[in-house]
Length: 249
Image (cartoon, rainbow, N blue to C red):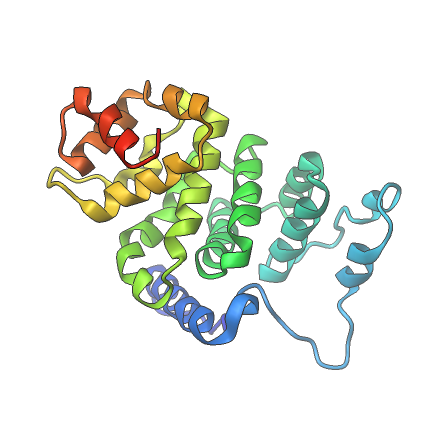
């Protein structure tokens, strides 16, 4: 099972979850993450999901919230179906998560995004939507994302497509925030050593998903441009050319 009894430390929990997620993604296909079963019972949220839209939306505003992966799964699914950002934020806040629970909720979304190729764009949209509606903070996202970025290169051994979720998430964040993009979330990728081909390719993959005008504006973000230069180990004057050669600008 994905969820186990509480481990000794939070770091152990996080490492176990990441390792288990990689195993599940490798051996169980695209439904490996965010999947639970209740024997002999049809989950009540299925009836909500298949109900007609419009007036039914009001019934999808959750009551009696239990903050667990199933709840996060449901509200993410609702948002992906109709793009109702207000409902997403309301349902998230209705859970009244503590700061630690909010981070855990993001971790559940990240786990699925990194491990399930079919959910990359959809879950990136959910995370950006939560951040944009201020249901979560940059700090929450930074703390949840850090262990994944630290282990991303190793994760690719078992989950070769995991970097694609990073591309999708970063591209959507850059599109939404531009020069206000918070570089703190990328700190695990930043190093004084260089060049770093793996990190460079992560940035390139994200830039390739940006529209040309957005990509050009992102180049005006001084900290982001500096991080790109360090990864490529090039001068700022040569950065644009390097991205053009990669087909990313």
